[in-house]
Length: 367
Image 1 (tube, rainbow, N blue to C red):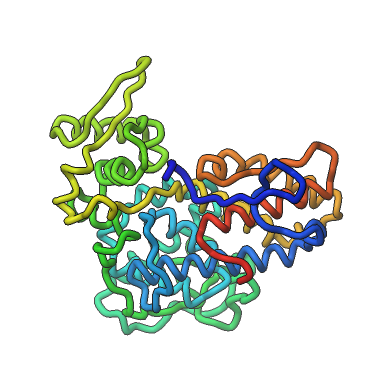
Image 2 (spheres, rainbow, N blue to C red; image 1 turned 60 degrees about the vertical axis):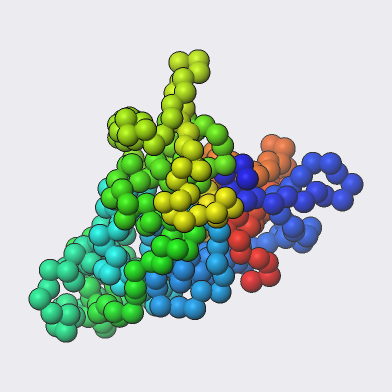
């Protein structure tokens, strides 16, 4: 499988040019609210599926063959779960149980805007406060709502409730809750949890992330730049990790045209994990795919977006698509573009591209 996502394509009847995903002509008139509900439902279904396979108490409806990026999923989930308080609290519970397997540095590196950073820092503060407490039975924090706080949950203002101090400190109003205590450590035999298997072996480090990329990407050699984008550490940190792995004779380097690329001998690593030749987890560019979906979902959630005229809706959708196009393309998602000035077609291609990105999550339509 080539590096990147699992984007599927179809072709319009009578056309040889592929488009992003199945859609009907009527969808060119789809309202913002309809697309928002469709995308949020798909994102929540995906998040629950992944967390169920990673240790959250839920029945996993599927067993994915890909390797999940834990920190990319956390950043994605603290936004997506603003529509599902139960999922939000279960992710916090999972973080409390599995804190030592999570990289705070990667979480902050993957939080690409102020809202991401605030949500991630609030979640980390809450988990840290739970860890510092001598007992988990104390009552919630002080009650009362602050008009300057942003409700964590869409459509559910935290009024007349005791608010969580950790989230309040980061500008959010969230009802105070206690950890459920239902989460468990990830099953490292599951392909989706391959990152945790490597972290047990190599530590929560750039080395573990570099090896995850090298062992899952279906390519004989991978550049430092590609490894760094997957690892979500600085290029310098990744280069140092690769130098260390090369010195240990577990990766090989090749210089072509002044650029170094790296590869691994899977046959040498397979016995360590008791893997057969076809057991390796598949690579996905999760930071790029999930990050782009968060930006799209936030735009759809913005109350101002609901009030746009058709013309402005199309204009902003086109601009947003241009901003996320590189990440979606990198993740293997086909980004279709309509000719400039043809508003209805531009909206249709925006909807089609969003659906194609969702198809890379393995979530089927209809939901």
